[in-house]
Length: 108
Image (cartoon, rainbow, N blue to C red; front, side, top):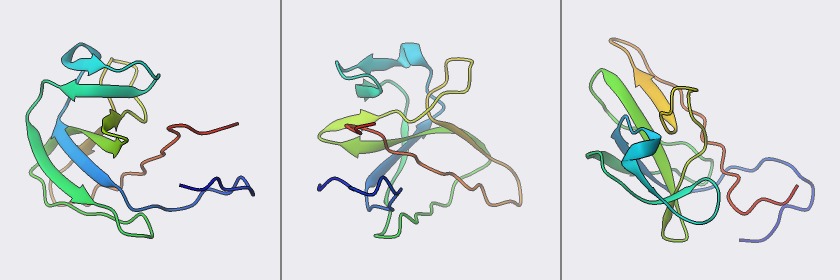
């Protein structure tokens, strides 16, 4: 993927994997910071974001972890301070808005 020379955040299409809530000790970490080779929690859904970065999935109420697939590894884009990776929550009768910030191989 070409570098964004303006430093502007740009939306991208990516494969996203939604797992049951995953903690740090349930992940097999890869060498680069923020990437894992595997997680030991069940895969709930696999979806793709479109060219504008939009994605959706119908999920039951619960807490989940979401990962992007980057160069055959899973990218972790955050944690909740309790050791849970890329967490988000689905509540009853609501839409969960999740912003996935991909900084894998970013240059600052």
